[in-house]
Image (cartoon, rainbow, N blue to C red):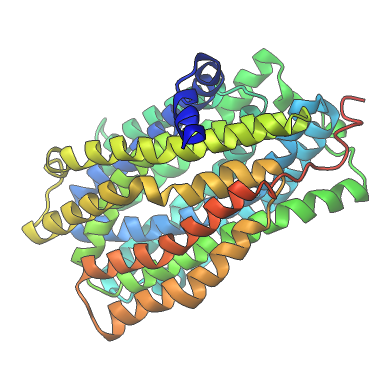
Amino acid sequence: MKKFVSTIKSLFSKDFLRVMLPLALPIALQNLLMSSLQLVDTLMVGQLGEDAISAVGSAGRIANFTNVILFGFASGGAVFLAQYWGSGGHDKMRRTYGLILLCDLPIAIVFAVCCMLYPESIMRILTNDAAMISNGAEYLRIACISYFGLALSQTFSTVLRCTEEVKLPLMASCCSVAANAVLNYVLIFGKLGLPALGIKGAAIATAASALINPLVLFAASALKKNILLSSIREMLSFDLRFVKQFFVRALPVVANEAIWIIGTTGYDMVFGRMGSDNYSALTIFRTLEGISYTIFIGICNACNVMVGKAIGEGDHKKAVEYAHRFMILVPILGLGVGLIAISLSDPILSLFALTPGVHNTAKLLILIFGIEVGIRNIPYISVVGIFRAGGDTKTGMRYDGPILYFFALPLTAVCGLVFKLDFVLVYIIMILSEDLIKNFLCIRRVLSKKWIMPVEGLRQAGE
């Protein structure tokens, strides 16, 4: 008990906050801006009707799917970047940067080409609603160009964050969000003498603003002459041993993210068949949920850098201390975030032109989120913030796969499609069936300290 009280007090120590806040706040603000971009999309598309909201929300899941796979390689690479940053291995950081790019760009190309050529077929995977398929395909065919921007942004931002340069990604996001808002307004509604393009206009705005982000990052990096300006020779100066080491650590992360996003897409396939009104409520809720999650994304990234850097420095005791502090910090923050989300639910939902049924469903989803958000983020901070920073990239995959595919997803599908239970009740069942077991497993793993697995080459780093 004394150790717990001591850890609580240490959360607010000046030394901890002085390191954590400069990392967490800009990243949280950056993700808040990106979530605001989605909110702008949803608000403006919402003026076209609930069918348009559902279609764009459903098509947006493909972008989320692509982004998560891209994040898998970037997050796997961050294991090396953070530890090499702590040990001074800048040459190895550049090689890791090059490998991430070589993985993410081909993935973006494949997904973009598939969505451009077969948008209707892809939409049919997610829903059987004819209007959602038609509208979603129209959006997807153009918006898929944004995947190139996502690949570059993921790579650039990950590299910069692991070197504790968090202001440039924030600046780039500001430019991207501003461009998206202006282009949405002009293209959706036909301003400045241009025709009103509706959903197609939203897709063009999404594609253009996604490409602006990496362009700004690279231009600013050219001025600061940071690691993004590494030469092609430096980025490709890896040998087969280094490549093998990278993929041994990175592929489990990619598999973990793929398992998770395919599973959540499975949830969408269930929810997409439970009525377009319910899916409209879910789309609106997820936009607000994304905004609320930004604080946890900032905290998680700060945790990843701080824990990884400590391990790179050889200070495992400090890494464990940081891990314990973040594990306690997350549920405390969750309590505050949840209360704010619940209290603001009516004012925010009033911004949308919703039928009473959609409004009530969205409000119930926000209430559920407000109650469980702190607990739900314990596995997130454990797997992404602590385990991966320590070099343990396989545990998250071992937890997510069995729980998701053998228990949570089948139970959700049966309750929603066979027993046809109430939509909100099915959503609660989904959360409980996934999170309760995973929380127990993650807490036990953090306390075991078995997640500390330094990457090779730290002793020779900086050569």
